[in-house]
Length: 260
Image (cartoon, rainbow, N blue to C red; front, side, top):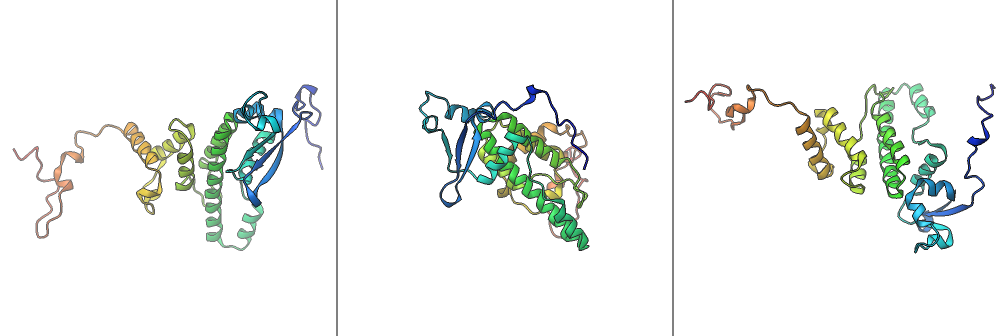
């Protein structure tokens, strides 16, 4: 096996946080609670939430006992945050072995459905991870998650031969847990403004997406569209008349402009 490159690096590239003390992070509650040991310096240098919680002299209990409790969060999502913190990566993709196994079975439809479902699951997981990063006030981690959204959306799925975009679940997660000025909201809105196709809405109702998101998309489309031409169908009222049985369809023949 070939040796990895750049095994030897300058001393200045050593991780300065390694000798520092660890703190305990208790995530979730009850039987589902998991405890993580994380380097304090690394954590507080990235997250303003942890920096405030662990600063000596504050009123936070965590600053005294050196442990932080996140009772409402998911340990699996917090694990992904630690992957970002320590390795600057987000491991959410399905292994290629599963795809290869399905392909060997020559079940193309099942393979395509599995690939599509995997993409949807990735978006949902990333949505939850983004909300956690936002709560922890780690802007670098939040930016990495946004980059992950863009990477998935702009990459052609090798099995379906299509680009798959975030649907109602990740959109709902983001919109329910972020402020109006959030940058991921802006990305999701513009994705729908510029790339939405009619079939996206064939199986959805108005209640499937947050009302605030639909308003943002509508406002974005109004800003992005070109001004209607003078020959716009909006000038012909017959395009919108109710059909009356037994009468000839005169759409386009009688208009307000030529009836005078």
